[in-house]
Image (tube, rainbow, N blue to C red):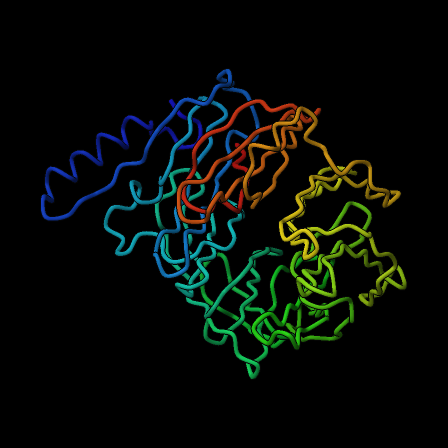
Length: 388
């Protein structure tokens, strides 16, 4: 019996899907695809599994959710469609973020302008939150906070500022909204404040370069902190610092990683205290280690330069730029997501390949040795762990 299905087995869901298909011959219900993971079953592991949100190409309506079941050593592709056979257009267009809060799983579906909300264990749909051009989601105090570009999905030098929406997770209703910078991407909650990385990506080459600070109680923007152009990722460590990435402009200004700290212990005001001279596309902080990969275009050589690095967040020193140690990184065509298992230190890297066909999920040991790989949906990107 699977641990993540609230006592509902995978076989039971397959039977239900087959019964629905027989009763509704005018509609095709696509069952999920199941494969064995080349690992031992572990009924006592925690996390018990990991959800993977596949973005799918923009305009193709192909966002999907996969599930790696560590307890039962199985991998399910396109699970949402099977668990929710009556939902029109299935999950939607472009999956941009996935997180678990309490008993609910939240998937931010960018071009469908919604946050899809499901039961975290069964993946059965609970409802949706309509937010225009939504991007990323974080949680605090019973509320969800969602960044949004707000305006149309289009490059526009006159594109409007973005916003952060507050959502009551009990009722799934929007309770507040505040304007931030242009095209806000990732956000992070630290104490009583939300920090938002503004990209200005729609207004290129006139990018934004600020981190917005929002007071949670009042939902009021209280500061905009200059950092670097075209910001994207923002993550907190265990020491109250924020790590922020800049995409640069893919030309004269390279991608870089920045460290921000409070000016005073009791203040929300932060400033950039260090610049880490490495490009960074995506990162994951686990304990005192920041794992990252970079996919950076090299104009001189006319190709992408890929690195897989690790930084000590205490010393801010680059420990390695190749944490995959067995040479198997050569199998990865287009790294697109990273996550680290807090239980055993396994490192997960997704490969979007050519962006139009199935991707891959690769698992490496904490020593950087490849353990296994498995096929995913199109453009695998965002991962979140499911706990007991």
